[in-house]
Length: 418
Image 1 (cartoon, rainbow, N blue to C red):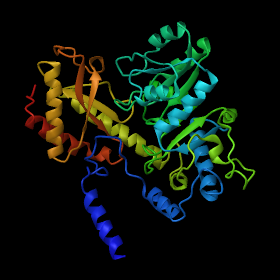
Image 2 (cartoon, rainbow, N blue to C red; image 1 turned 180 degrees about the vertical axis):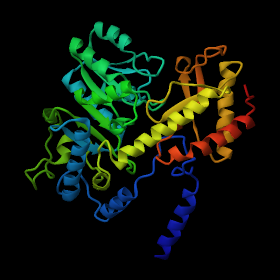
Image 3 (cartoon, rainbow, N blue to C red; image 1 turned 90 degrees about the vertical axis):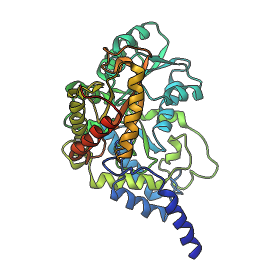
Image 4 (cartoon, rainbow, N blue to C red; image 1 turned 90 degrees about the horizontal axis):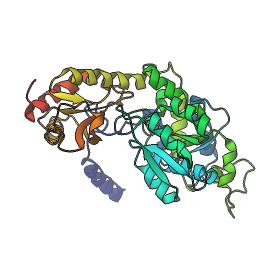
């Protein structure tokens, strides 16, 4: 035991080299602390260390996974469905696009220029043609540009991003569904970041309409390890039509003989998967049901309210230029400056000054049309902005403190009042 203690002490020392991810003053990347019930349930399952590939390796945890996935499908609006947990959004999107490629071989996958970069990489791995469609001024896929590209033909799948990771923009899925009636393509909803906002009560009407059409997609991805209060990694891929399971068909000489029930490995590209992740998600759903008026949904609304509050302060302050009002809980802004390149440099300085004061933000490079900076001379085509992800419910009560530190950091960076 002494040797174990010594190693664990060393581990503890090494882990000090981190940002304070659980603190409300950490408002940079998409890191939300797991709920206590998720942590405890995960630790309980680790004593068994189940593998949710075949029922041989995880009988109880496989059953809990099926129930937890069914809750996510129900949230979307699907009773019949096929789905499973996986390591995260990347693997989940890969499976969805792999199925799409099997159903529409040789046809192009379209996604917006603000869609997650993994879609292009996934298409490369799968050998599927991939193209991007321009975005509007709010960072959402431009429906008119999509219409023009669809008219040219050869499109099999359109990816609708329900919450971009740069700005939190939500693609107009209702308009995309309408275009499907004319062109007959498959829709994949990448709701890895924003999927749970289906439950939020304070979305814009336009954003709410888009979320309500996820049920019309052929497939969807949600990441419980983002807003779902789960440890990494826990993603989920869902299909509306259970018959796509036939495309996963394979034989295994030793794993599928202990039960006539479906083994999760029969509908997944991954083989070994942690049953502990399923147990943690199941426990969280039991404590915090996925309903619009529940405690879990309120936390999502609080995050968006915090983002709206901070965005309004930035918009009214003459020192800054901002992006569009947050659709979810992500906002972007930059300091005003004589030129775009100067604004980018000042963003970096504010980022550093804020970190010195224990406010941890993020930086993002964006096309100029996504920021209200028309009066700045354009000596480059992109601008480095500051970015906050206010995804912790506590952020609602911490906006005054965050604003105070940001004000100090902005002054220290040399941005003059206007």
